[in-house]
Amino acid sequence: MLVGRAPNCKPLRFASLFKRFINCNSCGVELQSTNAHKKGYFTKRVENKCLKKPDINQIKYAMFSQDIQRLTANHETDKEKKVESPPICKRCNDALHQNKYNVEDFGKFTYYEIMRNVPEQGNIMHLVSLPEFPLGLNSDLLHDKRYNVDLVLTKADQVIGTKSILQKEVPSFLKGFLKYHLDIVTNKGLAVSSVKSWNLDTLYSLLKSRTYLMGNANAGKSSLINALIKKYVGRRMVFDKKGNMVPNNKYEVADMKQHIKNNSAGVYHVPNMTRTLQAFNINEKILFDLPGYTNDTHATSLENVIAKDWLQQIRKTELFDSKKIKKKHYVSIKGTENGYCYTVGGIFFLVPPKGTINQVVSYIPGQHSEFKSIDKALEVFSECNQPNSTHPLKNFCGLTETACDKAKFVRHILPPFQGSIEVVMKDIGYFLLRSTGSYNFKGLYEIWLPKGIDICIREPLEKTIITNYRQFIDSKGKMPSCPKNRPLISSVYPMDHDESDVLNKMKEMYYERTSHDLSGRRHRDTDIIELLNTKTEENLNIYWYYKF
Image (cartoon, rainbow, N blue to C red; front, side, top):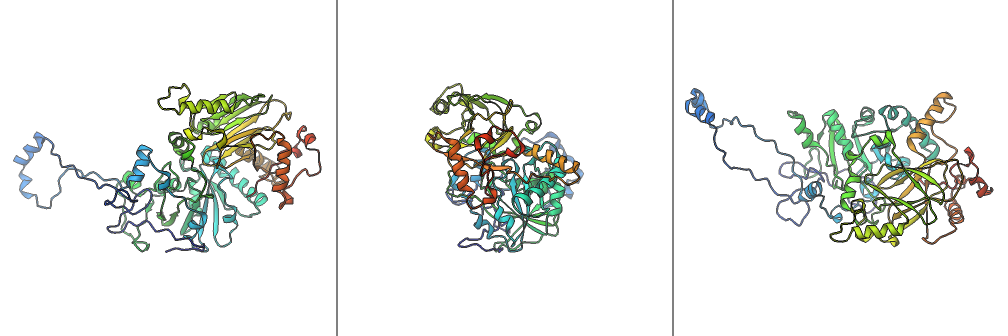
């Protein structure tokens, strides 16, 4: 068994497909058909023996064919036998086909529980969802000298418009970002799209003889493996009960479609679906699919806040409409004194400052709506959750009934920005927020979000990457491909619902956050109001700070 170092953590079991021990093709747990209340339960297939009315030509052949005497007892019929799909447990089957599941059935793993399965000096690919970058990025893992770690940004088609940008601009930007903002000097960073098969050749070239995929739940590990299986005719590895790999040198592929179906990793919209350590042979390179880990295992599950049908839309990567990246259709919203707000299903509420005119480009699945205030919005969504509700906005509601309570929301204040930013929410997605017209500071923007959901802001990724790469090329390398003199990412500032002096409170929180990182402080001895009312390159991203 492969074991690393972590206190009080049991190593994960290998998914065994050896002899009579059959595992779920999705989550990897051992299947059993005796107890419906225990994990791994599945119902055995029953062969349909119903007789069909014989065809007249078959009868004639049986009666008059001269070759009938030559048939032996072991002769197979001409009827083609249907190839069966690999078995999955009832729990995974219900989640896939009926969207029915209990969150408790898919327990969360900690980072240390997962790392225990990686040997020292092991090769790791740290997968991070690019739409949610930098949320999910583990700087401790990237700095850990005990392992050889590459950074892979997944789901790139949800942020970047073309494949060529992934191959040139993104690696250059990542190299600069890791150097200037995380103090890591490396060329081992790339972005891929499993759905569009972008950059898979480059990723394959980075694979070692054995590589472990590490990342948060729903980081795209299983989707990436399936894309590689399809491209390189990979296969699922077989282990015995002791976790030893069983060689299969006579492996042949007869039906490619069935081969992919039988060997693919389980990909579902439910996080933490992978329960065991599974391995795959990708053109003689072994990939280990580790279960996703969770930073806060005690955090409230999204299922308690967001309706399951909305979560299914959000989590299914293949449903993302990539045309949004190029067209960038926006909705205009004006800030009012009463707190006019924009929302997608009630999952978050954007409240712009009074007098501002803004544009919102949402990359989060679901219909948007606008309300005169958050209180009014929650009142409407509460009505939509009532039994037999016929409210006209029922299809616009993505909140559960218990979540329609303002006390269960956190009021996040965004640090000042000029032009456009992207607001990123963990396991939900991101949207672009643009302040229009000539720059004039009129106040701070607010995002109200259910408790337990991480949030940050960043400069628009695609624009930042392309703009700085052009400057890098035009200056022949004198200008960096990633800005190094200003923060590109920032945490937000949670405050009390009734806090009125948000700017001074933000200043206080900023100095507290940077008390142990004085190099991260900016504009220490200047008039903040004067800075906010002046648009210059030096005044960008005031009070921006992010602890990696």
